[in-house]
Amino acid sequence: MENLIFEQGKRGAVLVKSNSSAAFLTVPDTWQGVPVTEIGDYAFAQQPQLRRVALPGSVDSIGNHAFYNCAALEQLVLQNGLRSVGDGAFKNCRALHHIFVRGL
Image (cartoon, rainbow, N blue to C red; front, side, top):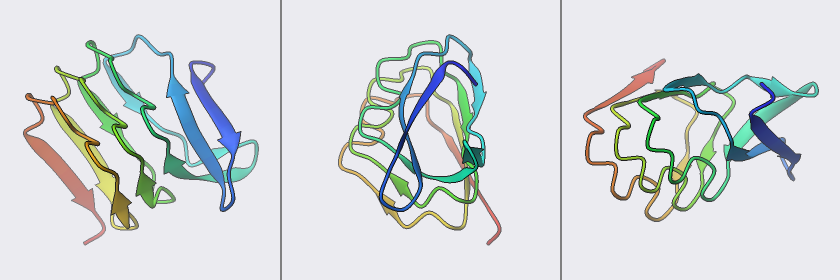
């Protein structure tokens, strides 16, 4: 996924930015052999084409304003490992009507 930018974090990989133009994205479980544990602040912000995002079970944190102004985002697929969601993570995501949590 060359359009997803990761950094090494304290507990695993952090997705810091998506440069993808895709409407449907699946974040991988690992980056360079390290589990993806966080979606960073503003990682998906200002992506008007984004309609659906699926996060792996290793992600336990979504940062502040991670999906800010993703006006077309309709669906978010999460796993039951999610522990925290930052301030304004879904601000101005007016089309977001379906959040699926798998593993409950």
